Image 1 (cartoon, helix red, strand yellow):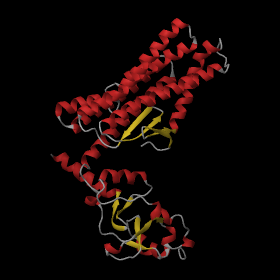
Image 2: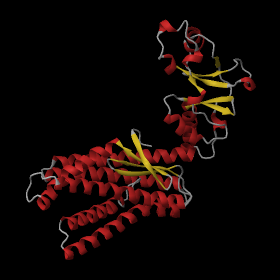
Image 3: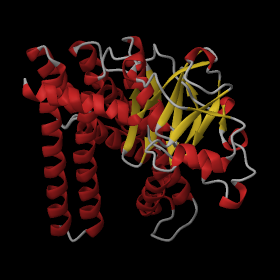
Image 4: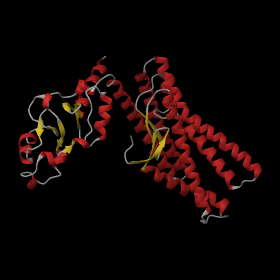
Length: 385
């Protein structure tokens, strides 16, 4: 999920989030559209207020169109039993974040084409409003309808470019998946095409922008091309990760034997016994110390990040129980949880460790490196096949 976003609300139980970068693109759209509407509303290039209001309205309509595009993906995914985590609007459009891969190529194809289909329907509706407006002499509102139709038609066509993870790239992956009956090679090829599309789009846009003497167009094309290239790489790695960790549970990767800390231990003794000369960055704080797992009632976690919140002068009198992250603020996982869910939890937190619990008892610890080592080993084995 994109960080630094706010939740606007929910539609069909799907959280709708707005990334901070969307504000920048919104301002840019308003600034670009205002002179267009000034000719209609103000009779010239000067700002009269109405042109600014129309530009804001058009930018909002484009934002709503992007949201409806992503809702097309999300609602189709839910209908096909693919859980959707959220929808996030950001500078380059929108993203419907799903919690699992499509169950098959047919579902992947249906989810991929749902978004462009919604955009195409909006384009047709906008075109009909413009056509009716021309006959009813609706003036600037007919122009708004024409611009809404044009923006959604561009959105549909652009998203159908065969560059994974764009919609067209997902259609390509679904087709290859159906033909080869294997998702991973299909994703690899689609990601290669996505990187190629990103490179060509960036270079072609830069060349066009320079030829038209438009530095802003050249910069924007380069940014979009770089984003598509980078996203293709990241999306393939994500699919690869999910494939490797499929059917793997926390109990398969966690460290069952782990050192625990007593809550009444002073910070200076904690540093001397647990930190100095050790590679561990976090320890479980339990009601009782020792190696008996049955007696390990989890109270919290003590990490180096917690220790940094206290000066060395406070170590002699400060206690681990006061410095630790208490149980109420912790995110823990069960041994039966999937490794991919645990990895999402690890990536969302500030520490690289998460406690594994069975009710109130600590049964182990899972480090991010445990997952990373397993993935590296599995990838090395797959590479030798």
